[in-house]
Length: 333
Image (tube, rainbow, N blue to C red; front, side):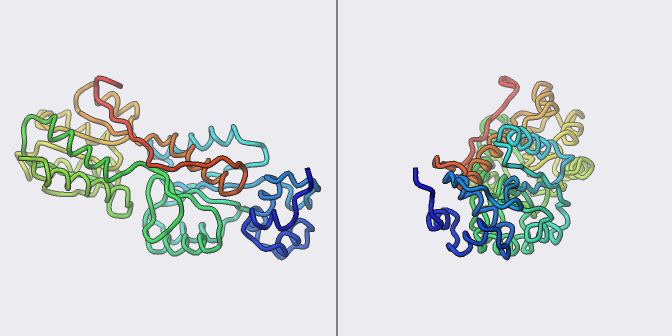
């Protein structure tokens, strides 16, 4: 087969032929991220010439996550680790954990990584600084994929479940399975994650539209911290003696289960997210009634497939419908 031309490489990389010439002839003066795109395009077209030594290294994909202590993000991180082990040795996946309470640091990392990065996958809070940084990266045509939760005002690919639908499912199951109607509350991290806002909105919308005598009375913020979550629930049980339902749209289920093991708590119908060893045990014990799992392993795989396609490292189309969440009860754990 004839050697691919600079024009073919440029079209695949989304750059000009002059940029391709500078990269492949090692002339410098090209941004590292653009170099990665050109090299990836050249490789995908089986460009036969030996690339300049400075640019023959691995193609680096960075994954920015938060809260390595949280079970969900630990599952997500392990999924990326397993996927990385299956990729060609010329592709490296770098996992970076940042403080969710420091959006300035997240924005800085998006714009100025300390590695030569070809693409970015991220699951971070929705904040104006983060959104502005991500829009700048998108304008530079750097492949980006948002996973788990979306950043407002950005246009990059999103991989995750339909969180509004998950909230509505929680409302439907509560209204159908809890025999004692009454007041219900939702609890989540705060308002910094769009994923939680969408879930709580879906939950309340369903109950107000079709929940009959179930009355949503409050959205509580526990910041996915055990002590805060437990304190919020104890206060809710005291404030609303006729409380019958709890929906946790975020994390720290274990602390809520500890409260619900007390006599008053056993009357509460509890829907939460993410199947872990602890939440599975709570289902069997009856403190949790339903767990909605958003399959982080499937999200990681889809995100990586999208990035590889954007880098022209495979030619297969990647469909991206919402990831299917899985409903668990005591009968199917």
